[in-house]
Amino acid sequence: MPELPEVETLCRQLRPVIVGREILSLRVIDAKLEGLGPLEGRTVRSVGRHGKRMAWVLSDGRCLVFQLRMTGRLFWIEGERIPPHARLVLTFPAGRIVLSDPRRFATVELCVTPAPSPAPDGLDALDPARLADAARGRRLPVKSFLMDQKTVAGIGNIYASEILHRAGISPLRPAGGLSRAEWKKIAAATAHVLEEAIESRGTSISDWMDLHADRGEYQHHLGVYGRQGERCKTCRRRILRAVIAGRSTFYCPGCQT
Image (spheres, rainbow, N blue to C red):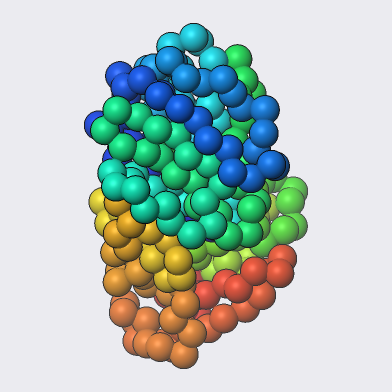
């Protein structure tokens, strides 16, 4: 599933090719996405993001809001080829944006103003005091707490594991049991991990590709995710796997306490 770094990568790649450009045509291939038009003649004024949600502001004041979910991908196509599993095609003067989505879970909505999120974006300067207050009395694992989009918008399974490894905190610990100092470590680790992943254009451990169909590179820098049984790069202990809320979680028993 594309998480914050992957969606931010798309935003940064989209801006040079579609901002200020007119939408020439909209082709809806999947009936589940009907009801978006007409968009012809509108210009894309800006491309923004909050968490995993992307919004294009159009010249008529409306917003086109994308949630890519499990397998949604956006590709920039300059030729005639349409990638497999295409659900939507937006044509611009210099090329086309294609939504490809094998599992058809991605959503695209046309609205006046996207509903505001109650949670800070993962790239915001997270307030350790706010995190501690939100976690107070909660017994759910800290990894599940970080993945709750009402807590911090944009963090998913991969980056929650990496953030907690960077912070030296076990993903199994109850969120309400962390100290203010530990939340400070998590806030700092969140900024570092997400920025590094964006610089690497995301993590391609399955089928993630960016706007130009290139794989990301952060998979080469992962500390724990997907590395069960391998040696921790910091302490050389073997990385373990646990299942938390139905999701695979990877951590180092030596570094993370």
